[in-house]
Length: 191
Image (cartoon, rainbow, N blue to C red; front, side):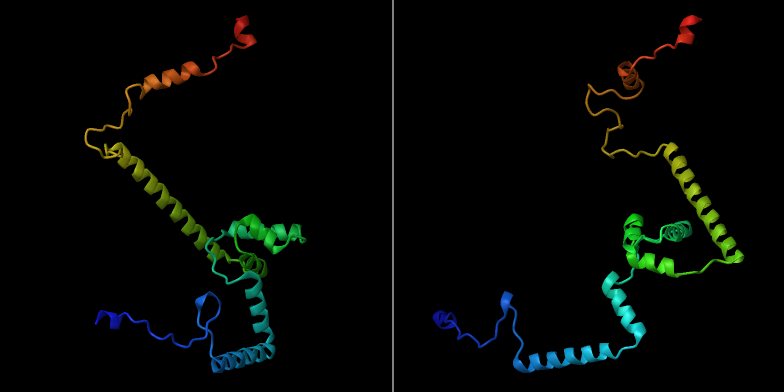
């Protein structure tokens, strides 16, 4: 019975391409060619704005910024471009480490915040500063409250790992001994 199950099956007739992927059947190939022809025709008769978008997408890629710039950096980019119009967007993008599409959008935009919007932005910035300084104050305060930030191993107090290592004032004194000694100036010698 086992010999019957292990008999090799007849190979199925398949069309193979390079790298072991299945080739398209002739009808699928014709359908794919028709789709490509229809897409080319649609692209030729597309409106100008769509052609421009496709060209920009092809040149710069999709626009999904991960690195956001501040208002000051955006103004710096505009000023730099005004002073040196020969700079390319790609060069500016490399310098500021953002995408060329972001540079293009920054240079294209002409929005300037009104006084009320600027006041709101400054208020948000001040609030952010106070929150971050409060967090840093809390972290310093909690550090001095006796919390242990060591490895957590029982019996380990955060001192030197080996006996020959020094910890504390003795090690600082040893560092001072190896430093270049203080040389007196001419004025000190005259007194």
